[in-house]
Length: 107
Image 1 (spheres, rainbow, N blue to C red):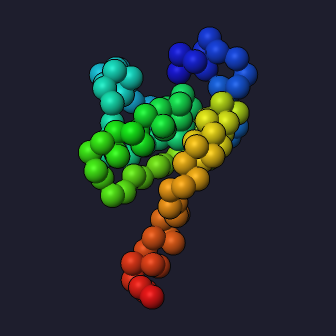
Image 2: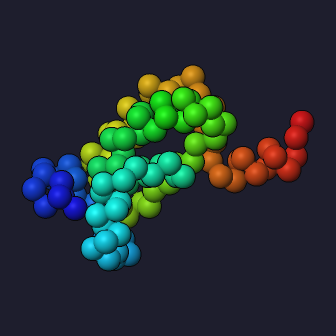
């Protein structure tokens, strides 16, 4: 929210909607504490993708889940996602449906 309020147009949402509102307590928690369950590609959080990869590798986690909502994307977040994918092209990425197809139909 801070970057959208005071940042350049690159942080403006591309979609015409808004995320579900959160309480002040939830907003502070989300801003101040890291999350390692899923990694968001929305808004400014997309700048933390590479840091998340390093964390997951350090913790020897097999999977890392990236989530995002199309209406919450911005020029900034799309650039960060593109850079992340280039930096990690040696990794095996798949979308949710591909994962379950592979899991249920092993070759």
